[in-house]
Image (tube, rainbow, N blue to C red; front, side):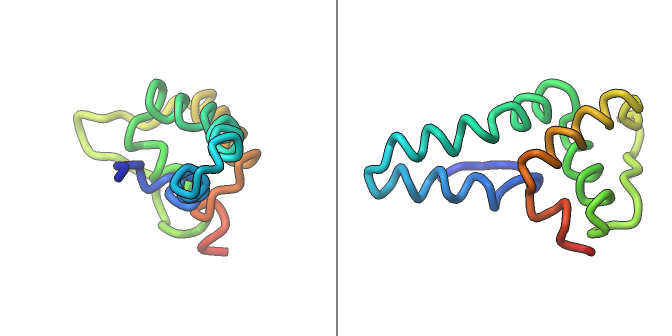
Length: 96
């Protein structure tokens, strides 16, 4: 199994399905499409990424985080949403 964040489980699923059925090329292609978003989430945002995308998608009202975390820098937030928009995770459109 995997332990993806709540940001993109719908995008991880096809990767695993392709892999489990022996379609490694398709799995690698699907993973390559979402890897920039995964890396940005892991290296720049942490759990704040999920809250930011869910707030942008109308799933939650606020992406506020508790101390000791700080809100995402506006440029980091913009970069995250740009990558997320390209990948089209469910969280970005679920609440609309």
